[in-house]
Length: 399
Image (cartoon, rainbow, N blue to C red; front, side):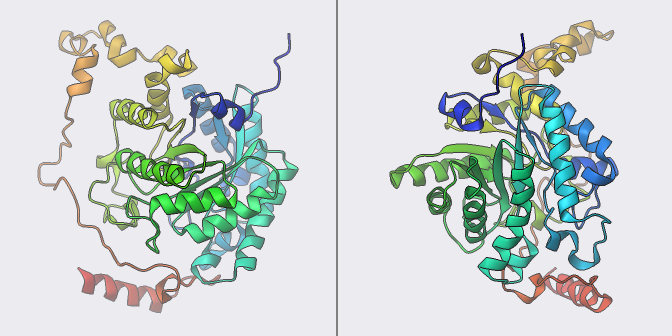
């Protein structure tokens, strides 16, 4: 018997189902050699489709219900920013990403989400119409490829996110909106609760947080969003897709302010057991769309899926190769390792870093610049040596 049509994102959430998101494609593919750190653009969807397809498959096997198109920073103004040369148009990248996500989603019970993110044009103070036109070009591809729903994600300013939601809403498809802010609010000081209200009023049915902060901070921020929406007498579903890095020492701009960003973050990575705790805390505050962003690998999503298996009623296929709470260690040859085959051991473990001269936390850079500041004005030409020299001097002065 042929399978029936898949339930849509709102149908699942309205029924109280848990939706597991995927992980951080940009960071994962940079580590694998398919994304360049700096521009962080997703031309790999057209240039190396096998790499994107494989990562989609690994997240699907780990339990993801959503295959997000690999279209982060796939707007034309970002693909061409500061001398970046990708060899593909934004339309080609977006089309290829949609095809790959759909191909893998059809291998399981997953939906395809087309995503847009913040733009250099907004940071450079371009007009609302100019910024919306950029989103519209991406949306046209998503409509043509018939994605299941749309996500506006990774926005530091709620104003730009509102503009994105308004464009996405014109498609007639369900819309999610996710900001990369912490409890202090967006970079103009708009509180999480007020941000959420603005996004819901703009037309988003799902609101939440992604990137920039760790799970503890992101769950706390979504809780503040939820309280704001409820105070306003509105309704929404909630999502969270945090970093897989511990960030207790971040400022309001998140992990990009840390001196370790982006090439020295590995000591901060959450363990799979941290992910169990994250998934449970997110669920307990009423969040039902639970996934990950930068740093999340498939094994992290598998941990989320395993923690929520009692509520979902099943384990993901990847759990076939993973004993719950270390249970498969019973088969290890060494007796002291076999003794670790229990939940209490892993829940109580405090992992060491193995770096005796390193501090446990860092001092964030905190330059405090945002939209309209001269340092954030973007341009198509490559960053000049004079610009870099000026930045080096500023960095030395701040340190």
